[in-house]
Image 1 (cartoon, helix red, strand yellow):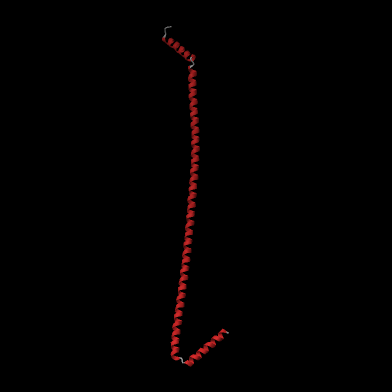
Image 2 (tube, rainbow, N blue to C red):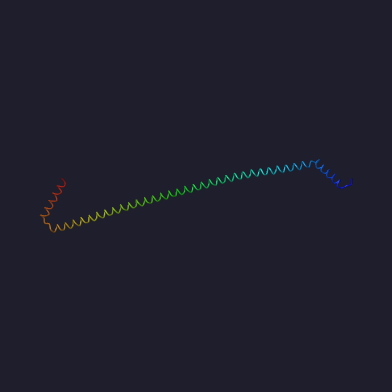
Length: 160
């Protein structure tokens, strides 16, 4: 009984017996199971957070696309409106120029007509003055009476 190996074996068996008696393997197993459950819960929570993050990312991408589409529609509408305003302004300008041109042409025609009337009136006045002077120099009283009588007859025939 003096062998050290034997006593080492006995001490090992006693140590293992105490460990089993104190339920150390159950505590170790429970600690490992708790640790595994904790890791499993953390993995599950990480998976849920990842899914939520992906859902949020998809939602924000959708909102960004909608916002880009809306901005594009706003820009297109603004371009159409600007084109319409430009076309309307161009049409109004052309209409204004046409009215002003017509008014100027009308004033020019009126001025021409007035000038022609004035020239005619001056010509008639000068012709009348010249005729009066010429007739005054060449017509005698008898000839003037005959001319007056002939003119009076012409007026009477025209009035009837």
